[in-house]
Length: 194
Image (cartoon, rainbow, N blue to C red):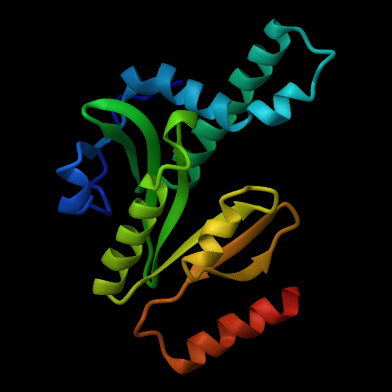
């Protein structure tokens, strides 16, 4: 599955306030595949729990196939992106995949292990991303599954819906210096969804 260490330059550096608390980012590599699979499986745990007729082996095989498909998809469709591991005191706790576009930082994926969720680290990282993007006059965008509990977090941070693909909402937080026309267009797109 792996194709060596992915060493694209990071599109983002954690702020000092997080680094002094032991958080860091580093490029992922092949040695991270077991962790990345465990992280992926943790994001699908509720869904897999509903497949009560499946054996544990069947569940594992399904998750492995889905993880492999996602892993390959991200690298095929976002080849110049930064694929980083989020660490706490040197231990992997999550992943952050970013693509720098002309008008925004696009979050391909952000995920934390279950024990790290709900303690504010995700909010701190997203807030820092928004601030970093704003310094360059960029917005921040992401696709979010409609049933994802993090949807409320994105809304609280000022992300608005810009398109609906059925399963996913494309959300964007406009750059602070975005033109009034850009902001009106984003609001118009949001209004059409409601």
